[in-house]
Length: 126
Image (cartoon, rainbow, N blue to C red):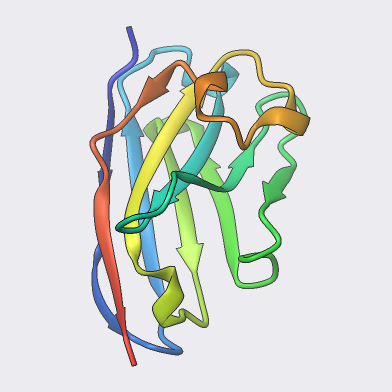
């Protein structure tokens, strides 16, 4: 029902910045909660942050709070993840997710989200 395509990943030096984009096919994009997850080799998929369609407020994991920010452009059906002050431990495949009804207290659970993108690789060098 909803197709998600991430882009913007790549190689960046520690301390640098990168912006990821996620384009959604849904015509009702403005009514979807959008989230970002990441998964490093040998690790479970980790919640990075999300943005509510109800309030527009952002929610972030402690590990990225103050460094990453999420925004959305409803006219372009696009959500962004701006990543600043990148660290080598940020290296992972980053996934975009969407859902129409999210309880933010359990947003870190992958099964909470109905739709997923294919992922984009982010590599941060020392």
